Image (cartoon, rainbow, N blue to C red; front, top):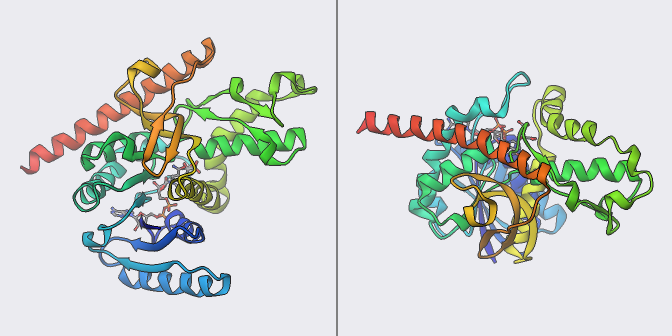
Length: 321
Ligand SMILES: NC(=O)c1ccc[n+]([C@@H]2O[C@H](COP(=O)([O-])OP(=O)(O)OC[C@H]3O[C@@H](n4cnc5c(N)ncnc54)[C@H](O)[C@@H]3O)[C@@H](O)[C@H]2O)c1
Ligand SMILES: O=C(O)C[C@H](O)C(=O)O
C-alpha cells in the first residue's frame, strides 16, 4: 500500500495525474499538494475526485494541504509545479524560472520524505531532474524524471498507425533529451516481436517525418488546446503503477547516468531503466554508431544548460546568505 503525493495538484497535469493514479488498488492515499493560497481549490479538487471514486468504486483516500508536513509518509512524490511553455517557446526557455520552483520543493521533499521516490515532470524535465536530485540530497536511484517515456509512447502510436496494429504490438524507445535532440532507438524497435527492419513495408516508413511529429507533438497540442494533459498524465500513471506494484519494468526515463555504462556522467537524461518499488536503475545498452553520436549531442545540450542553471541557483543562494 502506498501514499502518493502530487506537488502542483492544482495544475492541469497534476490534477489529471492525481485522478489517473488514484485508480490503482495499491494507492491507499492520494495527497494533493499545492502552494499556500490554493487551499480552496485543493479542497474542491479533493471533493470532485471523491465523487468520481464513489461512481467508479475506487477506495483511495484523498487528502490535501499546503504545509510541508503533508509530504511526510509519502512513498512516491510527483513534482508537476512550474510554468508551462507558450507555443512560441522551447522547453529550455523555462529552465531558470522553473529551477527555482523545483529547488524549493526538492528541499522540502529532502527534509520531509527523504526515503520516498521523487518523479519530476516540470520542464525542461532532464535539467529539473538534476536540480531536484541536487537540492533534495536524495539518493540518485530515488529521483527520476518523466523524460522520454512520453515521446516513446508517441512514437509507439505513430508506428501502430502505420503498420495498422494494436499499440501493444509495438515496442520502441526514444532516449536522450525530452526535446529537440531526442534519439530514436530504431535498433530496439519491434512490431509483434519482429525487428522493424524485417517488416515488409518498412522501406516506406517515413522515419524522419515520424520523429519530427514526435518532437513537435507537445507544441502542436499546446497551440491547439493550451496544454498537454492526458498524454503526460497517463504516462505518469504508468510509472507510478510500475513502482507501487513493483512491476520491475524496463521503461525509458530520465535518470542520473554513470560513465562506466554510458560513457557520460553528471547529467540526468533518458535511458532504459529498470523501475521497481526500490527505485529506478539505469541499464547500460549498446547503441549503434549513429545513435551513440546523437546521444552524445543530447548529453551536451542538457549538460550545458544544467551547468548554467545550477550556477545561477548557487549564485542566488550566495547572495541571500
Ligand atoms: N515532462 C513532460 O513530459 C511534461 C508534460 C506536460 C507538462 N510538463 C510540465 O509540467 C509543468 C506544469 O504543466 P501544467 O500544464 O500542469 O501547468 P499549469 O499552469 O496548469 O500548472 C502549473 C502548476 O504549477 C504551480 N506553480 C506555478 N508557478 C509556481 C510557483 N512560482 N511556485 C509554486 N508553484 C507554482 C501552479 O500552482 C500549478 O499547480 C510545466 O513545467 C510543463 O512544461 C511536463
Ligand atoms: O511540450 C511541452 O511543453 C509539454 C510536454 O513536455 C510534452 O511533451 O507534452
